[in-house]
Image 1 (cartoon, rainbow, N blue to C red):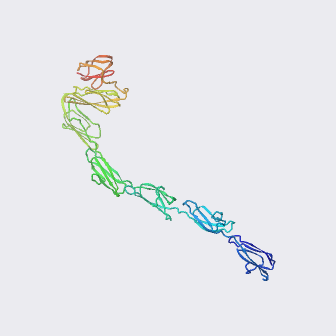
Image 2: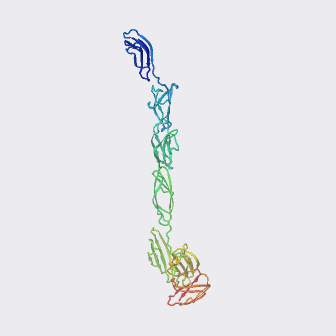
Image 3: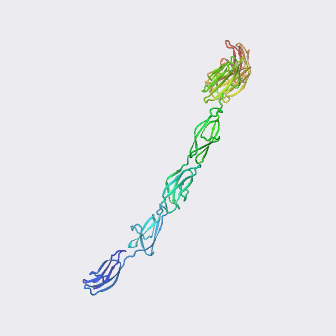
Length: 576
């Protein structure tokens, strides 16, 4: 046989057995062929499914004679790319995917392709980035796609996310409220953690935070280097004990001036019981009785030894007083009496006298000589007493003064003494805070009120041993239109002469008037009750002379009042 050519087909890929050997030439029937050095023979010149290697070619006749050797042929296969090492780089944070790896081939001159997604995609770049933490399987192959090989698994290192298991809390207990505590419990880790209780403003390597005060705390844990920061799902608050305080169960001041029947009853609260009580005057009970007015200081201690001090001021009640007058002795004369009228209240009045007078009425009249006394008990049980000695004299004295029943704000009002006989002394009294005194003489007062209302004016007059006390009311209106009586008054001045004669008289008399300049004048005649029963308009001139004739009038003291455009005056006369 003549073998002219041996055609060798190499293996197509690593790990395959698809190589072929074909003998070409005069290879007719009747020959046998071998590629394993004559160990086995076949009767056709093509060999397939061969692995890479060396094959000795032999040919012989069918009768096993005439063996010819054609040398040894080689079936080749692709070489797998060799990787020296794979360098990995970890991710930078728990939530990052910035890991990477670099493949280092044995022969940098060879051109290979690599895949990290199971051979789906390939690249001739040996650097891979943006990788998450975890295992990565590296594949390699030749540039022509042969010898795809699973090189090895490598790991992109990551971080274990911190896990907060619990946060133990201890509320502040000490007196200052500064011993609160937070302890952060986490899963065990290969690296130490950093801890924060103020939302990440400050960090500590110690998970135990002590000496904390009342506040709201936000818990965070991270890996050092500002990595893998997590926040605890709950915002925690430390609440101190309720502050040491007291509840006042009863507080009652002394009922009457100088008495010792006050009560203080307290109960401590907050802190940690039991409590101890220490009063500034030595008592150790939370309940005090029979106290007089004064300052009481209480120190309260709880079981921790914490202390708070409380002060109580027990006020002294105003003295309950009753007055029957500034003078112990009161003299009444013929026709007079002593009258007391106290405002009706729930107070209990008890009058008594050495002459047998007894009354429980707040208003009484004495018209007999004697020693009188009054004891008053108010709603609190406080009592007050006073005495008055009434002396009787068989002499006449009628204390009285004129006061209009009505007036207008900011218009002068005149009070005129008309007591008879003429008093030895007169004193006036009224509300000086709300009444403005314009002019004051012993027998008259000129006053002004700037607010509407009812005002009380009084006069105290003495004549010898006789004494008179009288009060009258006047109603002040906002405008003249509200007046029910037409009676106006002005300040006295510009009157040169004003005479009445005779005085006393029997109802017939003359009044003469001399003015500094011509003015219109008016005259009123007023009885002792302040009512006018004569009124004359005199026109305008320097001099006036008017005659009066009255009959049927009761004896007593009457008054003639002169009013000009700028002034007024009065004269008292006695009608016999």
